[in-house]
Image (cartoon, rainbow, N blue to C red; front, side):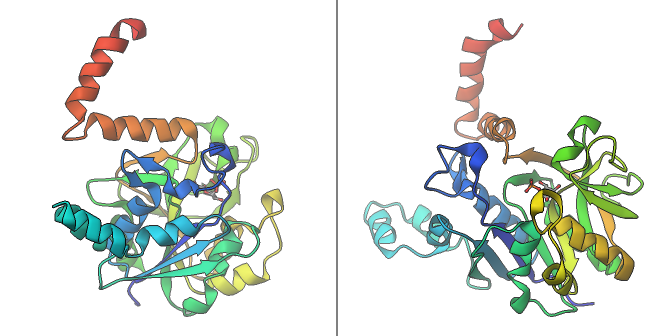
Length: 295
Ligand code: G1P
């Protein structure tokens, strides 16, 4: 079985839910306190042993490439000010053992199309990960590492899932599978992109972490548009069910849907409350200003 060394980050979406903040900057650069969402996802991938970070970018996404490039001018200023710890940190976000590759998705034709843009970089029998940076996933063991461990056991592609309220199935890819125990998988029988609650085979939703097989690239290239007139990754994965088989993996951890304002606020609040320096102040501020009004 080949190791999972490559990860695709589709970051070409327009981020319309966060306008005006995302008019001129990528939604993946929105920070949780001081770290942009894309960096959380990149660090999760690096933790899982990924060495090739493939970022599929679009217009207005230059800031993402700039973020991971070295910045000699800033480095010199930080060192002159005695802030070499920060300078060292910034220069090792992507360690020398890994590389970032930037591809352009010339047209916004859907998530499946964005993933297929990386086809020339993936062997037909090579596993690869996909991470959607606006899903911020946190676990004691990083979620992609949990998934790589599960993949090493079975050699089968897998998608991260969680249960959602049945009224929310229209926002997710939904799998037809038995609910696995936390940290375990079950076989996917079918998969459908954003079904209405009536059409949904279950309330097990795919969240933005996948380990897929290179054979999906040809499937995606030949695929016709699906839900919303877009080339859907879910439709491509459904084809893998017949060939490699696909597992639904119930990760151990929590998810913040930072593609929505509420999820983004929750993530920010959770991080602020447990921040070693600011956490106590945030708690005191909340207690002083909000306890009475929330009773
Ligand atoms: C995408 C996928 C969907 C998945 C979701 C997870 O949808 O198409 O299958 O459940 O990510 O966040 P999007 O949120 O980009 O509309």
